[in-house]
View 1 (cartoon, helix red, strand yellow):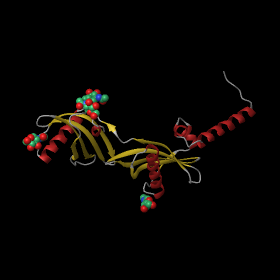
View 2 (spheres, rainbow, N blue to C red):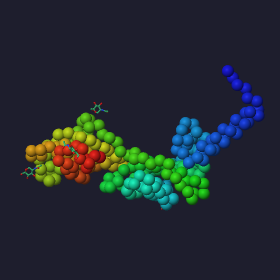
View 3 (tube, rainbow, N blue to C red):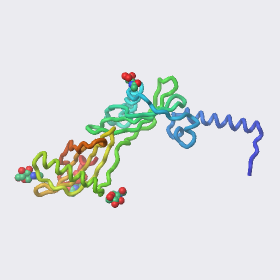
View 4 (spheres, rainbow, N blue to C red):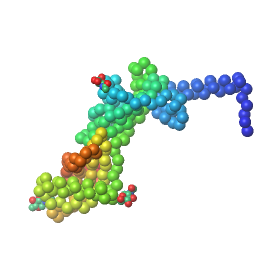
Amino acid sequence: MAIKFNPILRTLLVVVTIFLLHVSATQGGGRKEVISGGWRKTIGLWKPITNTTDPKVVEIGNFAVDEHNEEEKTKLKFQEVVKGEYQVVHGLNYRLLISAKDGNSLHNYLADVWVKPGGKSRTLTSFEDCGSYPLNITNSVVIALGQFVVDEHNKEVKTKLEFREVIKGYVRPHYTILYYELIVYAKGNDSLHYYLTYLQREIIGSKPLVLTSFEECDSGNESNVRCNL
Ligand SMILES: *[C@@H]1O[C@H](CO)[C@@H](O)[C@H](O)[C@H]1NC(C)=O
Ligand SMILES: *[C@@H]1O[C@H](CO)[C@@H](O)[C@H](O)[C@H]1NC(C)=O
Ligand SMILES: *[C@@H]1O[C@H](CO)[C@@H](O)[C@H](O)[C@H]1NC(C)=O
Ligand SMILES: *[C@@H]1O[C@H](CO)[C@@H](O)[C@H](O)[C@H]1NC(C)=O
């Protein structure tokens, strides 16, 4: 059934719609409102940030990490903005892929920051660890990685550990390098142990895999906290 609006009603509807869109863009620069459905187009297109070392961009990256640390009581250390985009709303929305250190390991985080008009006030609307992917531990490539870390460790310190299985694993891409964290289960002289290991590989070129760390992380107990990646 077609509804016919009279001109006044139609004008009113348009005004109300514009008002609602404006409110949605104003309230919190909210991520949900901004990215959901076709609304994005109405409010503003996302444009790439061409210079991620621009002090203004770096400052927003720093702000996102500081704010997250404060909110979640973490101690992440900002490294750099890897890439990013922005969107003109009521003020500016920034979405930044940030590299930060959590202890010794590098993570990528995706942060949304809303800079209010005038630029004086900013809000962190979202912050999530995004650069870490769980590995399929039954995949032969992952098993080969587990075998590699044990072999490499044996060579380096002249031991004779026997690789048994990969318990858990993650990979984090960062530029052209893949950082792997693996927990492997291996047999020593008489007992089985868990080992927390780090290795990395260049995606481009034919550089070999490099084992960067290998340490026992328990006495055969999977729930040991140091084994929890
Ligand atoms: C990016 O910004 C930095 C700092 O302002 C500047 O030194 C550098 O030349 C800029 N790079 C490009 C490609 O514009
Ligand atoms: C994990 O890898 C195995 C062997 O390649 C495959 O059969 C299985 O479907 C994979 N599992 C997932 C969840 O991808
Ligand atoms: C196995 O025993 C030998 C001799 O006692 C020792 O030197 C070596 O470190 C042990 N290896 C492991 C993996 O514990
Ligand atoms: C592993 O450690 C946890 C916590 O310390 C403990 O509760 C559990 O009983 C241990 N399991 C084994 C098999 O030793």
